[in-house]
Image 1 (cartoon, rainbow, N blue to C red):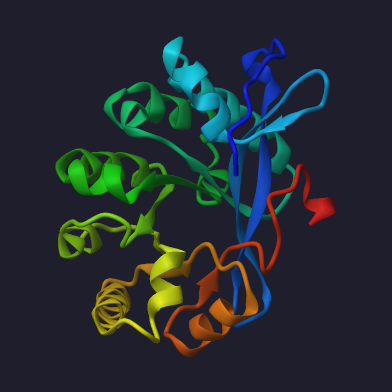
Image 2: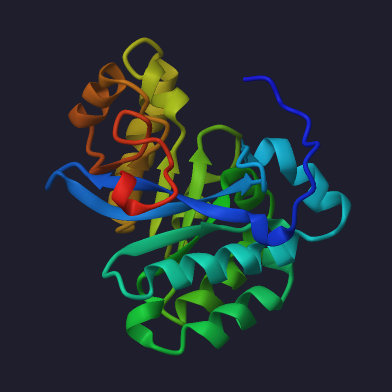
Length: 239
């Protein structure tokens, strides 16, 4: 997909959450939602993160973006009995503002347990001690941690799964190669086995078609996410 140049003026508040379901395959229902950032300009053009994040980073507004996304998502789900995830990056993990944000707005334990943060596997694998510290801090609040894109970059999966994570997301590219690549099959089987041993949920992500879904359904993977279920939408009513 070509990256479009952003020519419209916009404010940080114009970056809003779109919601994509993570589906419980065993019970055929939505388990939780991932809140994905989208820039919607005044002229109603919708931009993906890879098209606008460079502008956020250029102006050092990454933490403000996290706060904006959190506030909007928390407000949206305040009256809904639904669990949801929000993405954070390395700068968020390094800053005390992330834990302070969660403490300030999730004083109700019931509300806190509905929320999880997602960290990319690349960030997680390259910063295991830092992630372990953050996991301990947010877990004390009732907030969970997911690691996504697992398998996309090399790293110590055993150290990762030794943490009390709420879940990991297996890269969809691995799933698509499962039946044709013995090394991938061995890796996926090992990750599923270790995750089960540590009581960490496994989600197959980027499940874009029924062929990939059929592979997932043969594996000990209970959750999946991708276009085969729904594209990210601006409201749950449109899913």
